Length: 144
Length: 144
DNA sequence: CTAATTGAGATAAAATTTGTCTTATATTTT
DNA sequence: AAAATATAAGACAAATTTTATCTCAATTAG
Ligand code: SF4
Ligand code: SF4
Image (cartoon, rainbow over all chains, first blue to last red; front, side):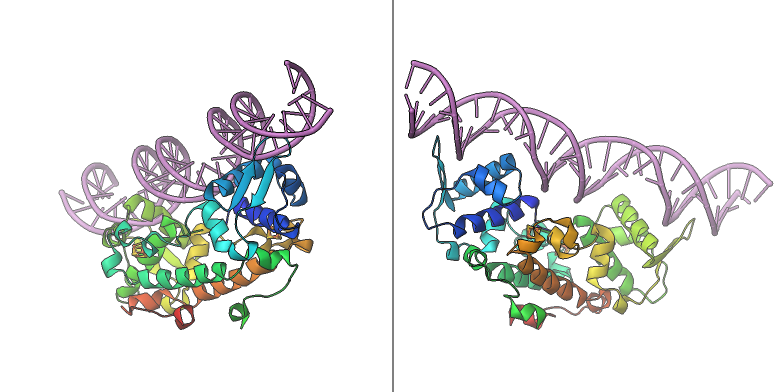
């Protein structure tokens, strides 16, 4: 029940990129250093982000990565799902046929509700929110 | 970002127990059969539940498990944390010293908020809620 | 053309998950 | 009392996922 280190790195890497002037080409080495993360691992993470279309990659000297979408359109949910795969609290919440008990399972509906709440929360944050150096609570309903 | 099969089995095993008359001794074999779960796996899960004090175990013929707490006092969060370990969305949410970036990390506060929301939701359900055959939404704020 | 710098992709170690199999314990039957 | 039986306890192990590293390929500057 947690996000992976890879997703944490990816989010902070993208936030770092978003703080640079729009359109700037960023190097993995630089991103990794400024986010305190292993460069070789970050490299593979950005490969995945590039494959997903979220960022664009340029190979060779003076290569690097640029955004392929506006940071304000990239939600935390998107990043986590690209890196960790779909968010599925319990197998039955996205694919009913994945569990033969779903028809007479009392617990099923709880997972549906919590899944909905969680994905809604993760979708309510974008990369741009953090690049603007806003701090503190941005999900009022979470703490009242 | 999901609960383990073990936690799913544990919850439904306890719900099955809660449907029986209070104080009844239940066998793993029976619990496993009625929850469509591997008996030997369920056995190890109930070992853990017993070690935590949630249920009581009796060895030998006519042995089995009984509740050691009232089903209405056993929250889903408790069960998941006993089986899967503490719920920690990201390492920084329960132990600030686990991440050297926490002081100047913009994303930290988001995880704090979502963690709080998630644990609150998981604490709002008890085993008894599902044993009563109540179905449907029990977390109004999740779907409005 | 060569060297330097970058991302791409193959490989692998470590940890976690998901189980099974054997052993110990208590009860019931003979 | 001994043997058979039913149960939980715990050791063991396969499979998967996570967390990386290491080597290769592509591009460009000089
Ligand atoms: S909660 Fe119920 S429906 Fe969902 S996976 Fe578990 S048993 Fe199946
Ligand atoms: S979100 Fe920030 S503080 Fe939390 S683990 Fe990641 S880097 Fe550390």
